[in-house]
Length: 119
Image: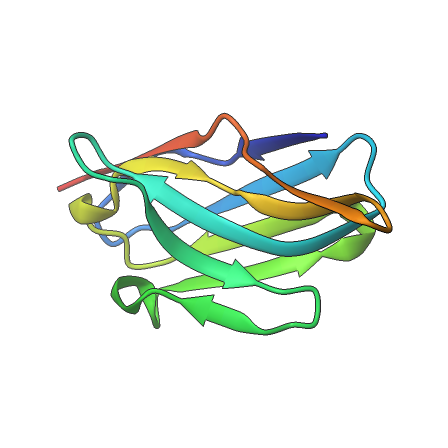
């Protein structure tokens, strides 16, 4: 199973970006999909999560600015980011819980995509 994040880049403060993350490989079912980020010198932190059933969780610092969504037909999760600030600069990852068979579920991580917000 592989996760590949794309969509990062350089944007000015106040701008927007949409990140995508595609899961591929030996997939039986993709369960919860999440977005994490890690800024330089800081610990990795959760940004948002979305279960297969549609339950959404956002960390307080992105509420009202970021939107997580998914396309299960494409095994893809998205993160629409608006009103970006320099504090959102980080590498963004999409760890996801994936069943590779009916009885076995694992968490997988991609390589991340860099988001840089200039002031």
